[in-house]
Length: 367
Image (cartoon, rainbow, N blue to C red; front, side, top):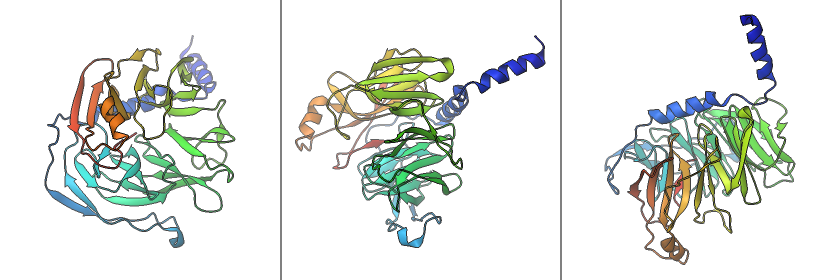
């Protein structure tokens, strides 16, 4: 076969596949993860120097009459992060080198070396790596926020105006990238993932993939999308998750409810099926999306977690506590002790990195 003919064969084959090759974004995500320096610190250690006071600004793309009130300046403290991801507890958001004092948060995603968060007042803001805070939008407090550290985008639904709109914000450029009007009769429309420059979202009309600045979103061939990463997708229905790798034409259906994928799309975190309300503790389940194998979670039988996420490509991070304490905490106990734990996937190598401060607000991990 001549070289020219071989190239034509591969070109034709690639055009018949409707997703991009997973190694591209996965490699970027893994490389970024590996560049994050992992540190082991004594639980409870903090740094004492206040280094900056950051102001709040608002994106200039919105008219004055819909600007939210600016938050008070944020105190920024020098504080090394014992894990590879951002997290929030005790009124402080922890990035790689600093901690930022913030009001109770409802959502947290890592983007471009910093984090985008949503708070109980509905404000959406970006905290840069140096602690500078910029208010970038508004959403309903209970509605989800998604982000991508690869593209530098964050997305949410803005409920203001005559119709709700899916907003995509470019953190790198510091501006709203695009807005897409959603069905006005559907209060439950929300984004679920940003992957390979597509924003995936769901409405009562179906699940869609939308490329900003592209006029028509593409309807997915099935509903129930929970996450997408490096062209691997995970769907959910009736207490099961379906891990789909379209590029390799394989999928595995396993027990679980709700799900998130690691940056390279190789692993899936879900929770054991059963009665559950958002914010309540749960038992995590961990799978290899390439084989369908269930992996050791790193959470003991007498423990539950309040949140779980992926750190580096082969690490999983938990906010974990004793099940008995969490049951008591539901009745108002003040003795609850939660720990920040990192585990290497596929091994029993786990470390409790920090004892979280007791506080009324729910701790969060960046997703």
